[in-house]
Length: 232
Image 1 (tube, rainbow, N blue to C red):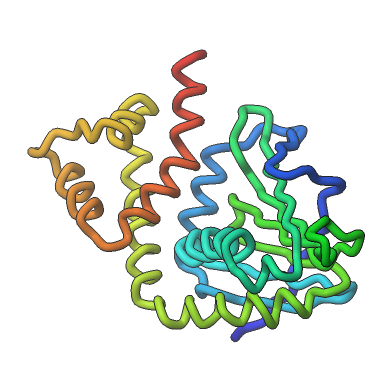
Image 2: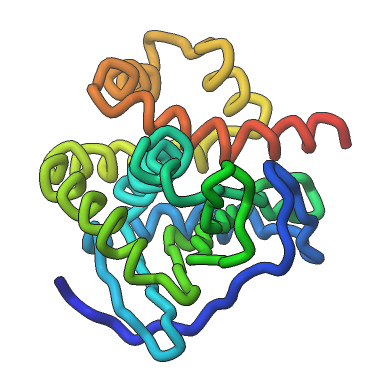
């Protein structure tokens, strides 16, 4: 896979399970959506192991959504991971309340089941840039036990991810023609007039096999921001 030079990123401080940390900025939603749209044209997966044990991964939008979900499932539901680690998660939230990043810290687990003192690795997921940085003393565990499997999943579902990216890009393009309230109705109530060209495209997307991932992206990226606009 292609390797690219990327900017270094770092872990996010002390965490508590399922906690939130407010970022000191307000997300530029228009730019964020544009970045998501542009990322649909990327290679599905590029990575580089940088100095200081920083493992940086950049993904297409579709691949990112699939990998993000898969990482959560592996860390919390995989018997292999449960046998040697304890996971703590933190979500980064910007001033308007939108989730812009997520961070998982993986520690060793003592024989009595308690959390050990060794931080094995940290996974930082950046939702707007569709990228991930993993660092820590045992980045090798992440690469061997988790990332290799993620690569196989992307390879196996390559065609589905291609379709997903096209669906997301098309959906984002059409959303620019809607006001925030119309977007909310389209997502939550499906109140779209069937005679319109946009309605046919929404209908086709809702029937495609990737609709769940597409709707997940729309729910997380737009619904909260639309609700915020309505309360202004």
